[in-house]
Length: 410
Image 1 (cartoon, rainbow, N blue to C red):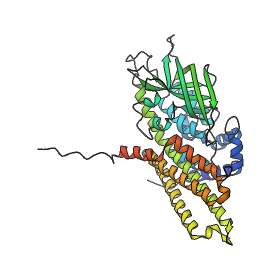
Image 2: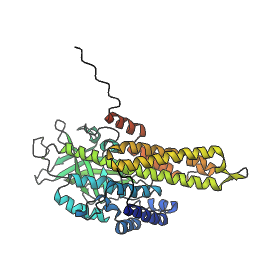
Image 3: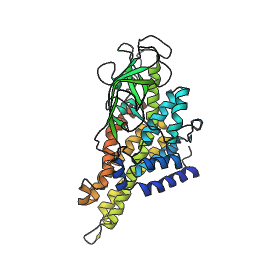
Image 4: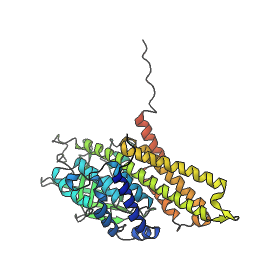
């Protein structure tokens, strides 16, 4: 393993940090999240055209940059530093890998080029607060109960009665990242009835009849979320036709297993990206805290000169560096994404909490910038964690809790 970054990667990081440093101060971030889109459209266009940011995850044959996961991890570490509100996570880390893995040649040719150019954004709609389970981060997604399991709840899909291969979706999905503004939705829906149930992914356009979207109030405004209602909404199956909703063993009837495998693979890479975002946010929260305690005086000397404060900052530095190292390693080996995400989320939570403490009385005011990082830490752990479940699932797959085999009695 070569841990050194290339000159191109270093240049991308430098350029991105320079652009975001000019356009993404705390005031600009607060203004962007209160727009109808939930992000700065002009900045997103600039990042797409100048740096090809959304195209990092797209292959060159479809108009993308065709970079490795490490490039996306480096980019997201920089966006995490400024808590950039953008469709990058929902589009590049979640939607693009699924379309690449499951889509037909026609679907990839039609969707990936505009996604790479930034003109089209997408969102993954998973029923209920089960995104971490669907991505196999906190538990196996194979049972499919998170998608409704054939019972009430979730989203149900039925093949069109006219036999033209169309599908109709019914149900409701909450907590969809960027779901209020993305022109393209990837909806996980349950089909096949109870006996032969399976979970498939469907493409829903923003102008589809029966689609109702409303933006939700969230703790972290930099992670805009939406509630999606599907009322007899026409949809297109992502991938080859898996057979009508008859339970027959049609070609591709086991497509549900492929969908679950693709979701799990997407989750591993997304975990590394999220870990880098959290590590970047934690590093910036620590840097802002160090700057504050250097200038703030108490009893005639800077607060940062007190030994107790130095020790607390040193502990935070170790936490942040460990999180950054874990994220970089997960970019090289996505199988370690869950552990890296747990390390980074914990580092961000602890660093953000200490930042509020060390800023003193001003830090406890809800409007202070330190709370932006605290809200990001809390919201990400709710969406993709919690930390103890991420670690428990990783330990289970590593066999740490598997009882030793009993010796056979001769």
